Length: 102
Image 1 (cartoon, rainbow, N blue to C red):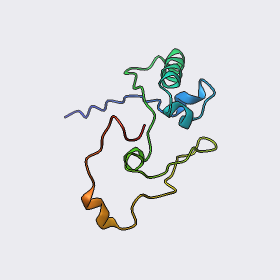
Image 2: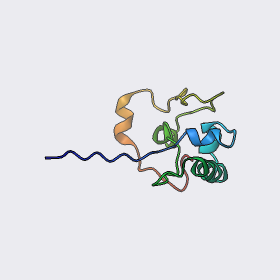
Image 3: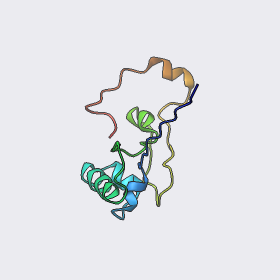
Image 4: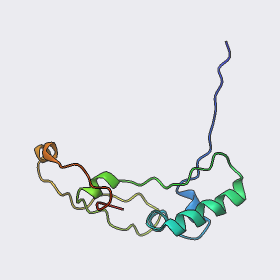
C-alpha cells in the first residue's frame, strides 16, 4: 500500500513582508490583505491561494479582551481580560459578528 502525502503551501503572515507591512497591519485591512497575497503569489505562484493571516485571539477580542498592536512581527497577546472568573464564560451571550471584533 502506498502512502500519498499532499502538501498545500500557505503563506499567511509572510505575505505581509512583500508589501513592507507587519502581520498586524495586514490583519486589520482588507486592502493590505489583498495586496500582500497578490504580491506573494507573484513570487511563489502557489496553489491553492489561501488569503489570510492567522488572526490570533480574535474570539477573546470579540468578547472584550484587549489585544494591542504589536511593535513588530510578533504574535499579539491578550493584555486585558474581560472576565475575572472562568465561571463567567458559562454565561456568555452569542457573539454578534456584525459588531464584535474585527
